[in-house]
Picture 1 (spheres, rainbow, N blue to C red):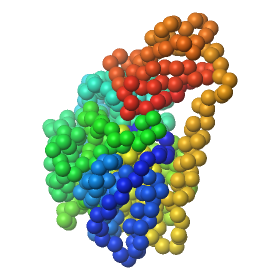
Picture 2: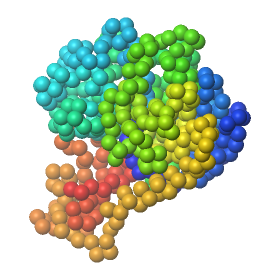
Picture 3: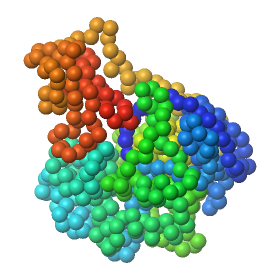
Picture 4: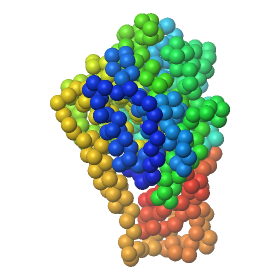
Length: 476
């Protein structure tokens, strides 16, 4: 998941079904998906279900772009966001098998220039630490998001980040570490991350339409358009170029190609009977590496109530109905993805949608699992929608503007330029400010330039000039 955001969104649905196989436990599944897509008002969605090395369901719903008739089908390309991370850890596992990388080697063995703020942490920081979100660093997504920083510059700037906790002491999702992991792959293999993934994973699996970045999308005829709310209306938005953080979340794929990836994973990293990753390395990728606190997990966990939540090597891990669930989502501007598997059942689900954080993805995954496992008729879509609606209202509550709001605090001068300048004791309604977020990291996130207005007491609202970024509230 590249970015955190609110759970629920409002938009308009246009439905255009494509052909898909259905039968057995999945009888009626297409109707459930169509209803969920309509209820959640998702512009377009594609879903596939894999069981026992066979694709038992694969179909598109809705349209690629609101206002246009082109339908989503099983070959439509979507940005898959952070589900890319498992491709990166699989690449590392291949290098581990070849003796070119070891999980617990220091990163400096492969990248001598790698440096963090604390020299002792730099010396101890391992390849495993890169891909398990236990670095102790803050999320710091502004190093890459809406930023001109290259991958090399992102890695260089890590030395200036003040740790938020001790190494391996606290879970904190961090995309920047995967940029470092991509550099390790390049150093150990002699080829860039993109080329390694294409040669060693995509080509052997026959994932011929999958791209490792935005390059080439413009020439493809069947590509979904990202959508997100702008001024409370769902609109089409441009693709976000994520090539500077590619190993964390830049890939683009269809459910047809990702079904091949899931078949490979469910067959313990084999394709056509040929093993691409050693069984020991495969098990290590799906083994818990670090515990995740419940408050840092997905809203759907409130319904599932898992007994354990952990991060593996590029995968989230939890239990579901007595089985191990291996899963990851992907979320980036206007796109949502989910890949979930019950390895013991050899059952997997892929959901791709062209809407920011379309959380019905979890509902469809759990419903598909239940149809195969039997014994329940729970309406995941309705229950999760209720939770998401409540969560959205709860998230907005602290920013409800009172009818009589105060002007008691000046705008933070180190973040803004105001005309006229606020007094030492008051920020008046006539003051206007241009706010440049993340000024403490010069050159980062230039897209975050907006007009700042005082909201109430210490709370300010920023209206970003890049309208795709929406609005943000800050307690400054």
